[in-house]
Structure formats: structure tokens, C-alpha cells
Image (cartoon, rainbow, N blue to C red; front, side):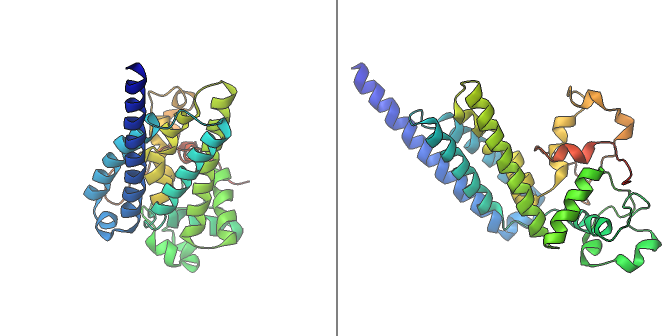
Length: 261
């Protein structure tokens, strides 16, 4: 009797895992491809809150069997496929600022010297400058972030260059998380709480904006308590909605800015 119940429980878990995995990939592909989701913030919010329970279902029903290497490879593979499915989603307008400020650094200018709309930059206006939001605000990104923008734009002056870089850093975070879990003898499936979380999925793979890890530096966070709040500038999108996100690079977006020496 106990054996039969165990088999039924295993079959139920396996079926739910396969359903959740398929749902994650289908929804990611829909978010990446459907214009209705791209153009309407309400649809993006709905998609976000659909991803949340699906990601949790994948994590909680992840198979318990298999060698650690197989488990880690499975998490990474599914995380990669989901992010590739989201790749066609248009980038956030912040990405145009990243590219343009990176161009300033490559050409020897100081992006902290003046706001983007200053007449002194008139000769450097291009399509990405046109697509930027908040041109009347100074950059909030520290030197390390500016150098990264410069390097990515130097390889390919295109939004996809930054999107690919953000996804690479995102996957690197999952690798580090898997290594941490392994070193502490914790189940590797727990990496799914980040790997299949809608915040990095939408923030990095879909929109590629650094503003999306703001909740990590909320004033209530112990991380945020280390930096004076009056030294932090927070931007808002053109829609007037505050975005939140998570990821290793996003902390730089909220660090006090220093001039590039």
C-alpha cells in the first residue's frame, strides 16, 4: 500500500513538473514574441504574475533523483532556454542610455560632466540618444558600470550586445548559486528560486534594465543601510511607473556615482 502511494505521488510530481516546465517555456516564448505584451504594460504585469507561480511550481516539483552534476546541468539548461525564449522582447529605453554613455566613455568624454540633453553633446546625438528617457537627469551609474557599457558597445554598438551580456552575468549568478548550495550540501533545486524567478527573467532576458533589482537596495534592506540614501538617485521610466528587479549588476545602478578619473 505504501509503495503504491509512493508511486502515485512520484507520478503526480513528475506530471506537474513536466506541465510547469512546458508552461514556463511557452509563456516565456509568448512574452518574447507577442506584440500585445510588448506594447501594453498591463499585459507585462499579467505575464509577470503568471511566471511567478509557474517558476515556483518548477522549483518545488524539480526531480529529487539524479547526480548533483545532472541536477545542476538541468537547472542551467532550463534557465538558458527560458531566457533565450524571452530574448526577442524589446529592451527598456534605459538600454539606449547605457549604449550612449558607453560611447561617451570610449570617445574620451566624461558622462558625469553634464546631463544628456546639454547642448555640448549635440554633436554626439544618435538614434540611441533619441530613444533615451530622462535626458534632463545626470547619470546614476558608477564608473564600473560605465566601463562595462563601453566595453559591450565597443564589441557591438547594439542593444542586443548589452542584453547578451546581462544574460551571461545572470547565468553566471546561477552558477555561483549552485556552487554555494553544493558547498553547503543543500538541494540544488533551490537555485530555481532565482533561476525561474520572473524578476531576473523579465528584467535581464526581456527588458535588460539595471533598474530591476531595486528591491535589493530598499531602505529596509541591510545592504541599503550601508549607503547614505541622499546620495542615491533613482530614475523613473517614461510611463511614470517605478520598476523593480534583481541581479548582480543592478546594485551598481543604485550606488553613489563617482566621476570617471
